[in-house]
Image (cartoon, rainbow, N blue to C red; front, side, top):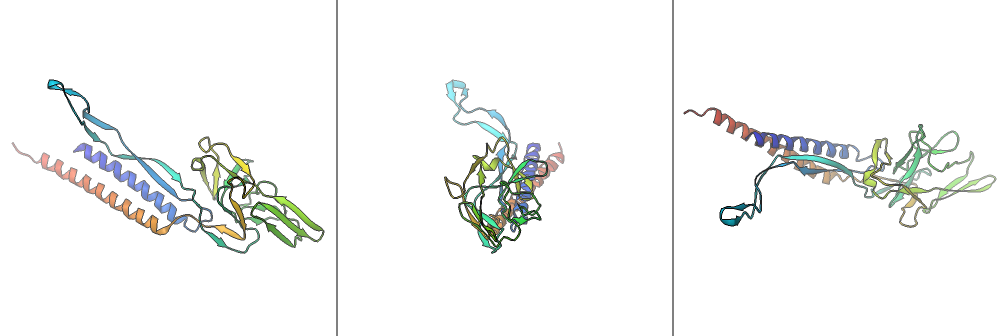
Length: 259
């Protein structure tokens, strides 16, 4: 009965964390370029009373064993990097990636970070930056008085000024294991040992995604799916709490036994 209390408590803690992950997904349903997370669980250690395959009297072998588990534990919250839907903004500095890849920006510390949020802005020096002012990798500069800026799916930037036409190029990056990236907040990711070494490439070539000017990538969170997951987590939490109550009632019955 004590084991049931601990196992159920572990299950309640696991489902609480599951609900936290779902809540974060739903909170970011309107966040540009946001990628939803999924939580993964493992069962805990088992107490082995009889081992499968053990030899009993008369050289009889046990076909199955007797094991009792101790609940569940969360082991990972993995990001799912499926593409979100594109929404048209008609803003010349908004750029979405259709497919695999990240934009790279430079933080004030000099560290490199990666993002799928293409809602870029033009600062007072003409550089394209994120909404937090982090400059886009490659030093993309739009001169003062530019008449038009065109960004092709392949990353070629054509800037028309009064003095003529200027060409620049925008590159994107990808990782062998994007789920290994560390979320920093602010729609940014940091490379880790688990994510692997970055690979730089030209958009719309060799498996890299194509760029779409005047569009932004929406979150890949599906509200209905998260609502279903929330109901499942709530019911699992409720059932585990019932197990705690049942174990407590059984202990009360035991304590009330009279000789």
